[in-house]
Image (cartoon, rainbow, N blue to C red; front, side, top):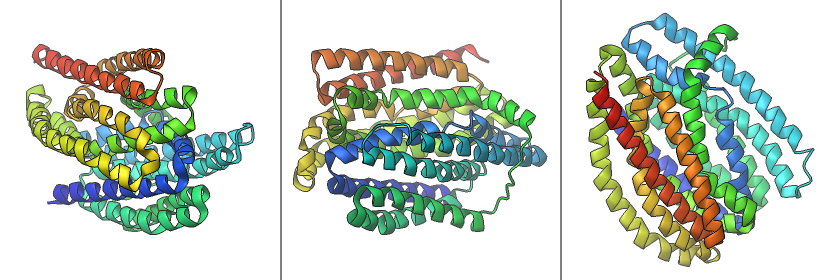
Length: 406
């Protein structure tokens, strides 16, 4: 029941965010919205400033729940919160100071300063999200995600309408802080920041390979944006942002399934220590996603372009790249369970190697596309092909180790 409501609230959360950001894109225009898609990379990569501590918590808390070791669980939670407070503050200071060292335009400087503040709230929010998932409190997550969705509409949209880019940034900060206040007042789990660096270092060593895989995944899925920003400019990035938003929305269901399955997989492995027991958690979701995502993506391929032409005519130049991206997104949507398996059984380094191979492929293909077809359509083809190769490597590697290990 809780998982059902969590899935429903996640769809509502991401759906409302998608529609809100579409309207924001219309208000800001391709150039300013392209700038936002560049600045958001700081938030994406900044999520890993904890150096793997949260990744270790996300893996180890379900494991120790299975082993019924409450003392270890409390220790991990408190030290993880302490690490996230320190790391996010350091990164925020660096980003804020960088705004005084750049010779960029006023919008970019303002964006950097807001991003510095958003970073801190985002990191603490991320800690509590992982904590709730680790304890299977999906019912509570459903409530806070629904509240997040409502506040995003009620706060971000009006502020963007009246104050444009400044209002958009301020609105996100306000919503983050409001949600954190709600979580801190209502969460049924207590966590107090602890600063035991020896244990934090141990957690970092455990979670760092998992985190690196996340960073590598982030690089793989943002090489296209970095290439466009560097070689084609903010306006082209604005057009391409349709592909970015659509990909994020379309990957919502697979990501939700992966978030639900990962702690279960870790707990199951903690109970049995048998790889065989994990197979249903890998293949059943993947099989269901194969046909569900096919139906969704075909519908989006034909329905979304006319809607863009009608509601966002200034973004029509991004339709072709959007259609191309849908092809790669299908394959990317199927691999969550295989990645979870490698992380759960201690094969993080293998997973990381696959990620690095995919990054190299993405960079080479994007570079080649800029020479052969210097436009966002070529970048979209390079990205889709990268996703297909990545899916093949991940699935085939998982099958190999399942046959090899007892």
